[in-house]
Length: 188
Image 1 (cartoon, helix red, strand yellow):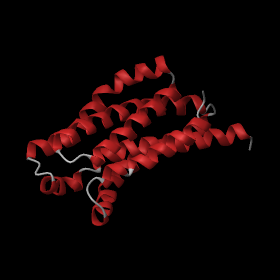
Image 2 (cartoon, one colour; image 1 turned 180 degrees about the vertical axis):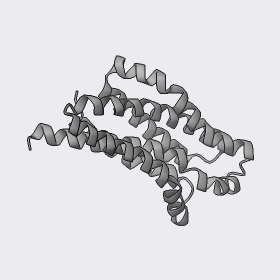
Image 3 (cartoon, helix red, strand yellow; image 1 turned 135 degrees about the vertical axis):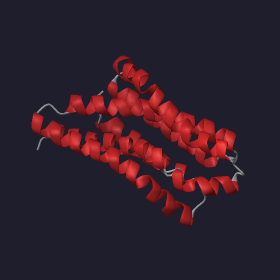
């Protein structure tokens, strides 16, 4: 296989991990809600906003982000989205009050909204043959579904061993790795 062929599949791996991470954060908070209520003295409304801030900004900005993909470029939008997501995850993992946590979750949603449509655009651009494109989209779709399914399980595992902030901090090294490898394998 040619280096260009291998590079495309590495790029798919990077894109799939990015989408997995964004999908994971749709569900990872659910198991941690009782812990947040106890440790941050969060009210039911605050807990609801902590969940919804991510989902509302993510879903609400997808169309705008799709337009930015065309304006900024697919790879740049993906890498910027991943950086925003990673930085906001770091912030979410380090705060000690619900107000800043809600804002960090909203910023995570902005990052996810930037990276998600760019993954779709990049997969479409990277794979030209119908056979490879079908396989690539199957992997991409699996990453999306697996992220949502893995969220509660990963949350439970992290909360058994670490503080509640770990459910956000886990995104930071993943985002850094995605940006590092993505800068090498994504088309410029």
